Length: 398
Ligand code: PLP
Image (tube, rainbow, N blue to C red; front, side, top):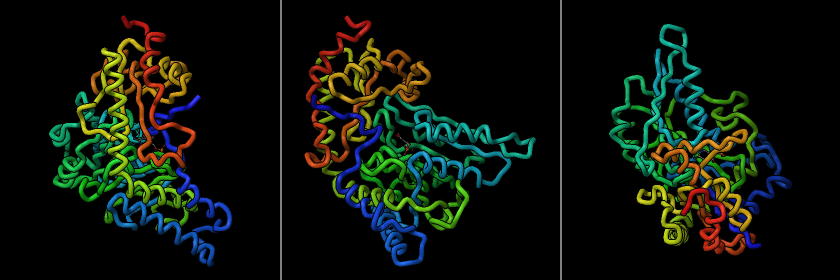
C-alpha cells in the first residue's frame, strides 16, 4: 500500500544530505567540541559552521545562536530566563491562548512559581490574549494588555495546528516602543516562510531541528545581543555559559545543514507545497459540502491545512485514513482515554464537538523527491477515498 505522510508539523524525516553531513561526527570525528586538541578543534569548527548556517536562516549573527535540545528547551529558556531575571516586586507576561504547550505550560509554571507582593517572592501574572476566528492576535489587544510590570511578550510565529502566521513585525514594534522583551516560538515557521529577526523585531526566537529535516533532540535559541537572560541549566562553560552541556555535535551539524537547505529552497518550495495544499482543500470541500477549512483566509504556512468535518469523530477519521495509508492528525490531545478538544480550535471559536471533528494535514515543507522521500508519495492519491470514507465513520451526517 502506498503510504502518504501528511503529518510534517508533528515531525519530518531527516534529509539524506543532512544525515550524510552528520555521519562523520558519530565516528571518525567523534571528538568533544570543547577539547583543545586537533580532533576537538575540528568538531568545534563544524559547530561554528552550523551556527553560521542557522544564523543565516534567521537573519541573525552567529554569536546570537545558542544550540539547545529542541523547541521546548528553547521556549523554556527564553521565558524562564527573561522573567526570572526581570527586576521588580511583581512581573507580568503576555502570551496568547493558542501557544504550544512548551510556552503555555512554562507560563503556567511561572504563575505558580510567583508569590504575592506581600511575600518575599515577586508575584507573576500572565495574560493569555484571545485570537479571532482565523487564529490572529489583534495588535491593539496586545497594546492594551501591557502593564508597567510587563517583562515579556511571547507570541508564536506560525501556529502548529492552523498554520496561521501572526503579524509579528507589528507586535515587535509595540514591544520595542514599550521596552519589553519579545519572544517568538518559530518552530513551525522556520524553514517554511522567510524569517528575519530584525524585520520581525524579536529578541528571542525558538526553532527545532525535527521540524526542518534535522534530527529530533536538537534546536536553537536566538538571543539578541545584549538581552539580559538568566541561564536555564547550570554546568560547564559550553556555549559561553548560556547553555552548558557537552555539545551534540552530530545534531548541531544536522541542524546547520538543514537550515542551509531550507534557506536555499523555501521560496520555491512554498509555491509547490501551497498548490498541493490548496488542491486538497478545494477537492475535499467540493466533495464534502459541510466541511470547512479553518483559517484559510489568514496568512498561513504553505504546508498546513486544518479542516472541520462537522459530525465526524476526528480520531475515528484518523484511524480510517491510516488504514488507507494516509497519516494525518487531529488537533486534539489524547490523555488517559479522554479526548480533550484542541485549545487552539476552541480559541478560534469552534464548539468542542467541531474541534474534535477537525483534521490537520501538513505537507513536507521542502519536498525533494524522489531521493529523499521515496517511501512516501507526495500527492495524497487516496484523497478521493478520503472523502468517500466519511460516510462509513460519520455519526450525524445526512
Ligand atoms: N513549539 C511548537 C509550535 C511546536 O509545534 C513544537 C513541537 O511540536 C514545539 C514547540 C516543541 O518542539 P520540540 O519537539 O523540538 O521540543
